[in-house]
Amino acid sequence: MPNTNENRSTDRETLRELADEGNELALDRLADLADEADDLGELSELLDEGSMHAGLLLTRRAAASGDLRELQRISDAGYDEAGKELDRRLKASADGSRG
Image (cartoon, rainbow, N blue to C red; front, side, top):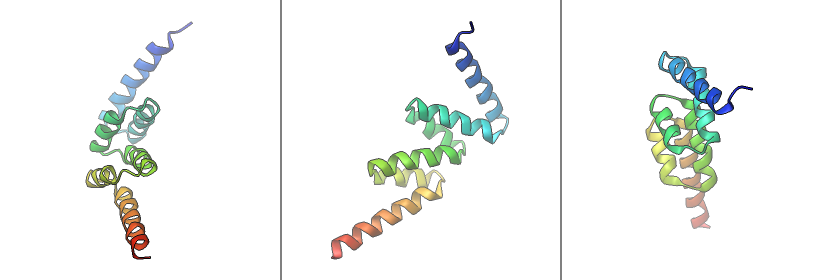
């Protein structure tokens, strides 16, 4: 029976090689694996490499925890939806304080 951890490692190495060659689906899969492992550092690195899927996953996490600074950081890294979510939350906060 094959070693699952070894297969996972090999799969990750293959995905990394493909991503380095410009394969966006491989980059997205790496982001999914990092998300499953709760590896925010790797997700951030993948976003820095241009993975919009990593940006989506990070934005979901930041929005769920209400982390406005993280939403700003993700937006600054190039994922526009994080900026839209940040703006939406800031406007809702401002509207709530007026009423």
